[in-house]
Length: 211
Image 1 (cartoon, rainbow, N blue to C red):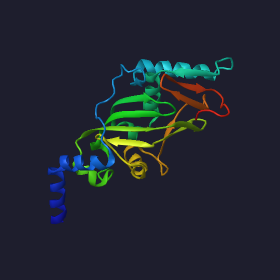
Image 2 (cartoon, one colour):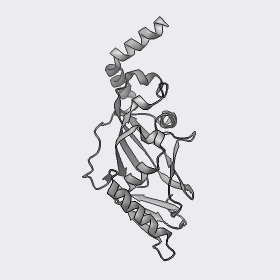
Image 3 (cartoon, rainbow, N blue to C red):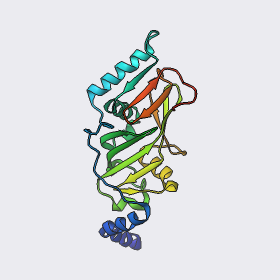
Image 4 (cartoon, rainbow, N blue to C red):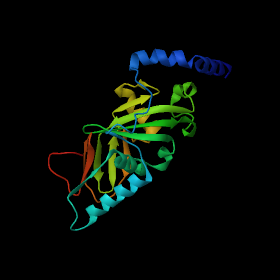
């Protein structure tokens, strides 16, 4: 027990050089949240959520459109409200960036609400709030359930290699064993197509395109 305490204390005292050394091997990236002023980046707001819900309601109408387009703020509101609260409560200052075929979520991860063993040996090296970026494609698994497959994960500016992403996504974002985060969405749309300029929700699945 004494040895474990000593090891833990050393890891805490030298956490900065340890993380800097780790970043040389797994990749270092910026830690600032992307500005919402960027046309491809959005943040959840009550107004955007209301607008999103209104567009989805149109898809439910028999004479409604075949598709609707969500802005970055609207998709950020949709994602933020669709993530399970047990995960969402640890994501502060959430941002969503639209990429071609995928989305990237940025936030300040509240490490205090995570289980003590969630990040293994990294736990003692982290501050209460740490910058997190997770990215991957979003698709509809079945009516009412979307799957966001996490393929990239960066914590505190350190991009982790693919073999570690699935496990870290499970521990930080509630992903399943395949690295996918389930999102509860409206069954009014069956396909999602993501572009940097907006996200298209289709009432019916089209052949050969999107998720």
